[in-house]
Length: 319
Ligand code: SER
Image (cartoon, rainbow, N blue to C red):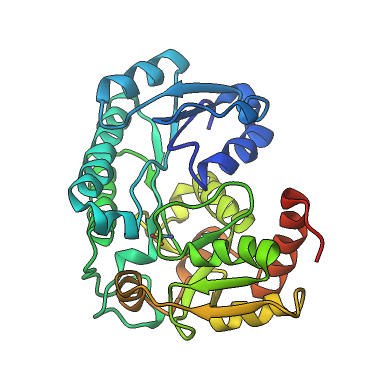
C-alpha cells in the first residue's frame, strides 16, 4: 500500500479509517473521497480530499491517475434499512459503484478492499456459528448487493488477478461519526441517548442477537487483511469476522452498570426487525483467525466502557 484511495470516506468507517491509515502510511498517502463535501472540522484530520461519485467512472479514473493510487478501500454504499426504502438506488450505488472501481483496479492494477456484511446471509443460513462457507440467500436488497459484490470481487481476482479482499462486517459501533441507514445502528444511538437523556427507545426487540464490533477492531480487520500474505488467503471475498454478539437487552444491562437509572424501552420497527431476524446470531470467524491472524480486542464489556468514556468527553456530559 503506497497511495491509498478511500471512497465513502465521510461515512462511519471511512472517517476513522482516514486517520488510522494516515498514521500508518503517512497522511499525504491517503486520499479521502466522498459525494458529500468535507466538513470544516475534518480539515486537520484529512490530508487530501477529492469529490468522487462512484457512479461516475471518469471521476474515479482521474483521481487514480492523479495520485497514482495502488490500493482502494471502497466504502461507498447504501446500507440495509436505507436500501429497503430505495432498493433501486441501493443496487445502483452498491453494484455499479463497485463495478466501476473493479474495472479501474483491473486497468491500473490496484488492490481493492470491499466490505461485505452479515447481511450477505439470509433466513436459510445457519444462525449460530455461521460457517465461512454456507447458504447465502439474503432477502434484503442490501444483502443481495453484498453477495453479488463478493462474487464479483472473486471473479475479478480469478479472471484478471485483481487483488480483491474483503470481510463480512458485523454492526460497527463507534463514537466519532454516526452510522446511517443500517439495522445495527441502534447499538450506537443507544449510547448517545443514554448519556444525553438516560433513556432510549429501541427499534429492535430485546432478544435480537446480532454480531457487533467496536470500530478499532473494524479498522484493524480491514488493514490487517490488506496487509496479509496473499499466499495464506484461502478465501478472499469475504472473510467472516466478529468480535461480540449481543442483543439489545444485554447491551442495555451493560450500560446500566455506568448509568444505573438508564431506562430502555422498545418500539419495534417491523421492517428493521425483519431484516435483523434474517441475519445470523453469531458468525464463526475461524477462517480469518487461521489465514491472517484475526482476533478482536474488544468484547461487550470493554467496548461499552470505552464508548461511555469517549462519548462523555465528546458530548460534554457527566453521569
Ligand atoms: N451495519 C449494517 C447494517 O445494519 C450491516 O452491515 O445495515
